[in-house]
Length: 323
Ligand SMILES: Cc1cc2nc3c(=O)[nH]c(=O)nc-3n(C[C@H](O)[C@H](O)[C@H](O)COP(=O)(O)OP(=O)(O)OC[C@H]3O[C@@H](n4cnc5c(N)ncnc54)[C@H](O)[C@@H]3O)c2cc1C
Image 1 (cartoon, protein in one colour):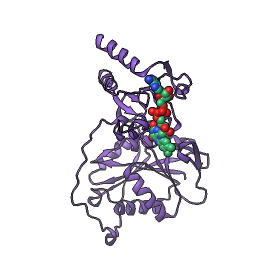
Image 2: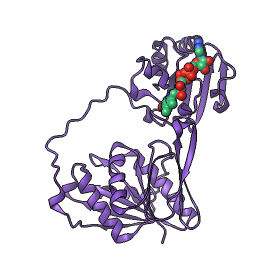
Image 3: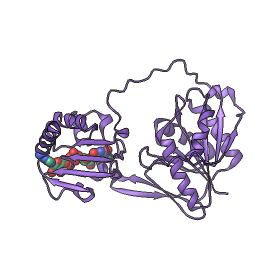
Image 4: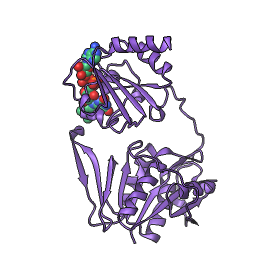
């Protein structure tokens, strides 16, 4: 049986967007390989989330609802997941490439003595259930497709924001399986004493429907903020402006920044380096403004404007003001 499992990350008992994105990906992989989708839901007081996972594509939700999992700790989560995998032998196991997923997945793959492909941007499958896991390599200049032919489960972490979220179907039926873990308590050496949340200093560009994105061709970013405010969007950036200390890192789009897929992406003075495109090419509608008509960004833009970024921002701000 080709079981495709997804670790469904929750924080404060709210499913993270990447968990739902992976449910959609797993559903489509299962459809191509006559497989089933299993969701791993771990935490304390998380059981009510199981139905949402079924609506988003899970056939079976394995729930470990235990106080020991109230706060994320590597050992407790690894013990629970390794036990489930050893009992059920899934063919594939997917994680979001979040800080938790990046911490947990390698620990589990080492314990299970199987392979892990980190930071994937694409997943494909053949009829036998073999995964083809694609990730950027050599500084993003090429993409490597990696297979795991000799061990199971095939494991992968997938970048948040790369895969679309599935359409929720509340009429879907699925099974909810409560799991009890045989804890090796002597190994649970870490106790969370206090949790301090970092206050979010900039808006989350991954959630934005419209991004006004600035590159090195933007000399003054103030009009970009004005424009984003008028269009109810958010300002993002290429790495060039982050490296120059002009923009904050959480605004960076691209391979070493965030992956975004807004309804509209306005790229001002961005050349379109492959590492930048990796983070935004799935945007629904791309407008590129660049003085160089040969800039690579124009190859993926729906609308290209060969013009000075500052002049276009000024004109748009003026038009919106009048409107
Ligand atoms: C391992 C690695 C990871 C990386 N990760 C990222 C990443 O996550 N995100 C990222 O963005 N980059 C990343 N980079 C860097 C990337 O290769 C590029 O250097 C970077 O994206 C360039 O940013 P830019 O387009 O703003 O600047 P440039 O490439 O310098 O382009 C500036 C553009 O502005 C245009 N321009 C100039 N003046 C004007 C004007 N007045 N009006 C309009 N247009 C104008 C120019 O024609 C040019 O096309 C990475 C690189 C490496 C090696």
